[in-house]
Length: 107
Image 1 (cartoon, helix red, strand yellow):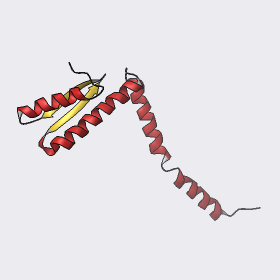
Image 2 (tube, rainbow, N blue to C red; image 1 turned 60 degrees about the vertical axis):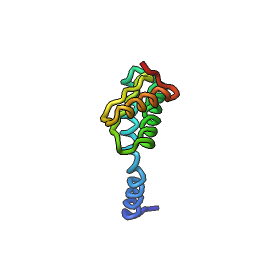
Image 3 (spheres, one colour; image 1 turned 90 degrees about the vertical axis):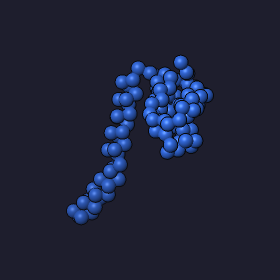
Image 4 (tube, rainbow, N blue to C red; image 1 turned 120 degrees about the vertical axis):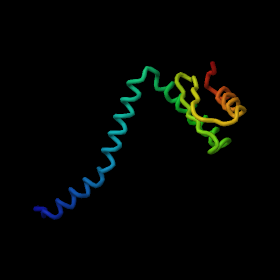
């Protein structure tokens, strides 16, 4: 049975349209794998550090809002806080919060 050119073209168009999301997902997967592979830490340690950063940023955002600009970086459960804070008592509050985080270490 012969299939017309229009049916083949429509089928090809439908096939290509369903694969549109595959390229970004593949690129993101390769980039994520490369980042995990190039880091000396285990993937568990990377996940734990990411969790520490997200929890600390959420706590800062919820309690201090737009009054401060603080970046949270965690590496091997050690937290680095950088940014701008006005009152001195806010700095002490941030240090207390970072040491209270369940899995972080404070030096």
